[in-house]
Image 1 (cartoon, helix red, strand yellow):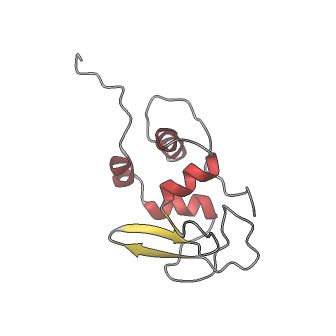
Image 2: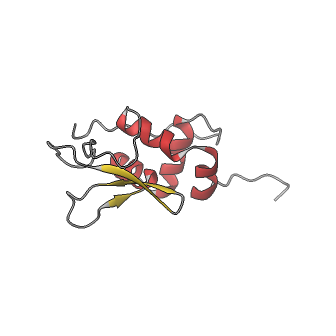
Length: 116
């Protein structure tokens, strides 16, 4: 109404503004190498570091076969899990970490120090 919208970005709009690889870099605090089985899972205890990244239809996915119920995670999935938040809150977390102005307070930061 009146040309003003307080609506958040959609996930698609967010990914158009912030590169998926950059989000993963913030989580893992290192460069992302596609197909290299060298990453430890940030969502479980992982001593071996055999997880990896792959591209699937334009989506960068973190692959962790150590989880019996789910193996492929988008950057959105990991931010949601690590911050224990909703998808709406994920949008705010990523927007705040990459300085996309949504006129909202910072909820959390992207951090993978939960298990590693």
